[in-house]
Image (tube, rainbow over all chains, first blue to last red):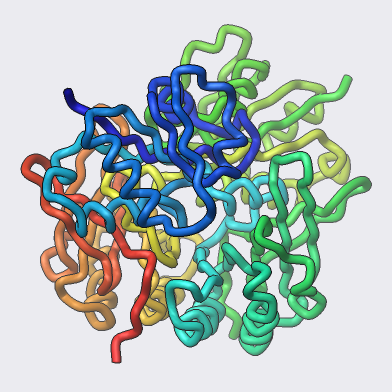
Length: 253
Length: 253
């Protein structure tokens, strides 16, 4: 009896922003493992037993999914967005490397999804239209000094910057510090976007500037995009402006 | 009569890696505009007139789509991958900013998709499991000196680096130069991945090192991922190794 593990990204929140490949994998799975918030977003899946976990140890959750697959079960392990971007995929391979060698022979596939920054950018226009980077602002798994260094270098490289996990109850002041670093390297008028719960009922979007960006506007559901000096806004009669970063880059002299 | 424009990303190549939202937009459209290679990948869409163009002026293609929408037509403008990542979305907003003011009142939405680096990473494991950047290696729209600067800063920031458009017939030597810059800042054993035509019939994957990476292996269909010093490979009995970048980062002393 040969099991399987599909590590799937269910997209940012809207049910129809899931790929058909991921939907099919969920419908085929007999066990669905994931953080309870993501499992609650799934459609009814009558064939499957759900294994909901807290937002705790990803390595333990990955090991649970791998153990089920090694027993011959067909398992889907769920991430929000894309499993490969600050999601469960890296934890799965870390668990495999540390785990029994039989896990290396399992039928495993990672199925990509729409990660939060792509959905946020689409709602706002095309702010990621030029070179960009994605930085996880949590210092749970890396030193804060590393994050500071990366922010400064990313700003100097004129990357549009996507900040994942900008704030949590346990990390309230770090976004304030991060914006301070960016202000030293990027013009005060640079466009900053707060995108919360994109595509979901409680979606909230804000377009502001680096100078005026208020860290208190971010929570665990928020993704922040920081434009470059070239990023532009187009005012509209109704609603938020469109924001885009031109494809063409002209080096400031 | 009020038209609409949907700027859609059809994903990296596999038909089932399109989101349901994008499929629905394509089925609803009366006009589908795009580069002919992407239009050829679409399923039969009997309601729609197709407007295929060469891989030329994106701004002109965007203007064509906007003109149709302004006439009251329902239009889908197609990009491969995600329209917001080196795709058509930025060209649309550039055209709007330069175009008639009526275009700002049009019903426009960008619908996100799975961009090439996410699909490539998923096939290889989880190489984007830590902070990363996406850099378009084409110097058609920015100076080569800017690209060189960004490569050096991205390497110093220890970002995993995704290189889009690493080569074309007109740009044969630039990837060689780019790899040279990366070799000055990153260990020779750093893992480099060439992912060509991911999810399509002619898919080709290669896992090598920065030292041994051969620029001749890249073409217009290739995406390159350059791992950090922390990126790891897990050998398997059969097939390519899994590659992943651990979530945890420990600063080298």
